[in-house]
Image: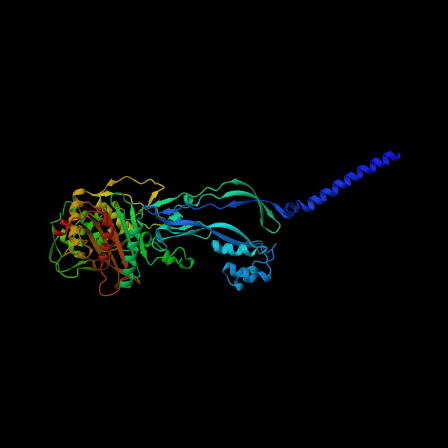
Amino acid sequence: MSAFRYRLLFFGLSVVVLILLFRMFSLAYFDREFLQARGSAIAERTIDVPTNRGIIYDRTGQPLALSIPVYSFWTDPGFDTILEEDIPALAQALAVSEEHLRKVLYNGRNTRFVYLKRRASREIADAVEALKVKGVRFETEYRRYYPTAEVASHIVGVANADGAGIEGLEAAHEIQLRGEPGKRRILRGRDGRRLRDIELADPPEFGEHVTTTVDLGLQYLAYRHLRTAVEEHEALSASAVVIEVSSGEILAMANYPTFNPNDVRDRVPARMRNRVIKDAYEPGSTVKPFSAIAAMESGKFDPDSQISTSPGHFQVGDKLIEDPRDYGMLSLKMVIVKSSQVGIAKVALELEQEAVYDVLTRVGFNEVPFSGLPNETAGILRYEELEREIGRATFSFGYGMTVSPLQLAKAYLTFATGGKRRAVTIVKTPARRVPRDEQVLDPDHVRDLMDMLQAVTSIPGTAPKAAIEGFSVAGKTGTVRKVKYGQYDENLHIAWFVGITPVEDPRFVTVVVVNEPKGEVVSGGGVAAPIFSRITAHALQLVPPNYLAQER
């Protein structure tokens, strides 16, 4: 090979070496950060982008449940090592004890994922980020927040730690509320940190909103009066429901005791139970008006028909039916006004075997109310009780059956509509299909009955404490002995009142029930009727008063 070719080869190799040296210099100084990131990258990954659960509103647009952003911190013990020297500061930033943090890390040492803190506030997130502790990772989530706390918790329900509804409207409308999370492709580093967002593959679909029929102001008043009643009468519980007559919309549904859905420690099953729809009690004398309807339908009785209640008790088989005293001769109207057990039982036994049962089933007894809330009870109404004379007698005054407060309210709604069976609902949107009104009772019979029920709320009726200044009230009391150890206990009672107002143009049906009131006064007229008056008076604030009603 000639000298020229050697020089040419040497020159070429020198150029290649210089280029390689320049590239090495460039990579070392100009692209160092990029290469470090690329070199430490494990893989491209697709992660979920959290969605925002829909808001639940009251009828005026006040939020009852909404989602707020929170931050969850975690680590991969199989890959990361959080240094002992970082634990004191990290525990303080996470607002947990050092002992708790060490325990979490120790228990999860053989796993690839462990939460250090879930659903932390923005302030905690800022404090943790400022530490820049290696191996601590975080993700943004949404936490459900309930602005009204315990006031509407039985209606709204609650979502669990993963954001899924498990009670109330949160559960009933889980599909609409939850939305769909999105997908994002990212580049994650060897230390677990997100290095770069590559693209948003699928944007999240936010949940739909739900608007209830509930009026938050009325709901709060109902809750407050129930709480006061439970404390005053040392009762086990109290419940109330208010229905707007024209629409069948539930304006308030409250219980006490209740629970605060924002506090996980307060989610005790007994307190979370919505007694308005889930608990069924014997309705007692609140059933007598339906027996009176059956009597008038038979053609054998009208409001003025006379019934002898002397001597104040009535033997049916081996059972004795008693009144508080001997009322003597009473008209059918006064049987309702005085709430005579003897009188209504005698009436019922003169009717066809299925007469009272038939009226009760027409107005919704023995079936769930279908209000839009989950797990409603249908109560108990046993057909086989009709085969026994005592069964027909006790049916007439509300023993031997059970109903929920909402079932009873829906049944009385039939009186308020002039005999039309009307659907009830607690949800405005999304709209749901409801059956049309159905005429199930004779309007003339209902008119006569409303006159009887109006007399109940004035002297000498059983519920003058249900009166509301400026408005006429039709209603019925119920005082029921509770069963204990298979027998009725004379010391345990359920106090009921159900009312319709104003009588001339019914706007509201309200049911109040107090479970096991204690003290000298335990009757529906003495315990439940005053609560009805206070709650319904608030609902009537937008209705012009009719002072002629009180003069009647």
